Length: 294
Ligand code: GUN
Image (cartoon, rainbow, N blue to C red):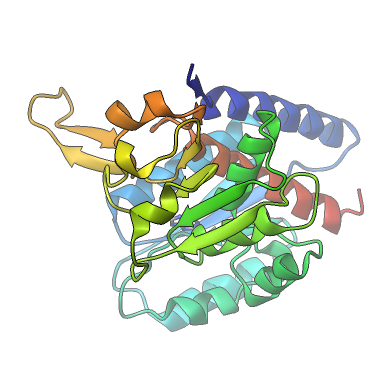
């Protein structure tokens, strides 16, 4: 029987835990943790993500603010905003929602973020710390995937984990986390990407298959081993005139044919997504505690 990994329910449970901690913090006379976001332009998906981060922040008792900039904003203007957030003592952590408009160099922007407030874990300092196994802000999606596997009691030790997709935000960091020498990881990891030959031959050997390639319903039943654990990181809006809102959501996996083969599977929506947002909240709480010596 396939078990569905209910990310939404687990996220609610962890949010309750965070909210409890926030109540203790404020009862001791501290201000609540404060997460800020910089949002550039009007990209629909980015607006949705940031709104969802704001909503979740409020649910756990955090303060939340969004700094909105026009699509035409300059790199200099954004660097000034980052300078402000880097030093503002009322803000514990902030993110710059990606992607940025093409005239802005994303690396210049990310490199300017104060690593102690880099709750997305995107700065070179946090990436380096994570790879070295030091205390770090770990990017939210990989962290959410690890939380979902671990809190669902999935044994990872010695398992062959195949990660499809090598992005800086998901594939590369999750491959690193899964291969680490600790009780929540210890996988043998294969990282596949757009130039991988015979992809299906490799995915079929996966005990744990993490798909983060950004291609709607790409992974089909013939690519998956019987009883595999399947983590689908993709989320896509596909136009469909027959639906009330004109679209449906799907992942990188063709769930209608793949799920029955798996021991565990993350649904889309309601799998990895809710854990991603919760991880950002966990990182913000961590940033708050570090600066307040709690
Ligand atoms: N765009 C897509 N995913 C992310 C994320 O995790 N953080 C930020 N800042 N932008 C994103």
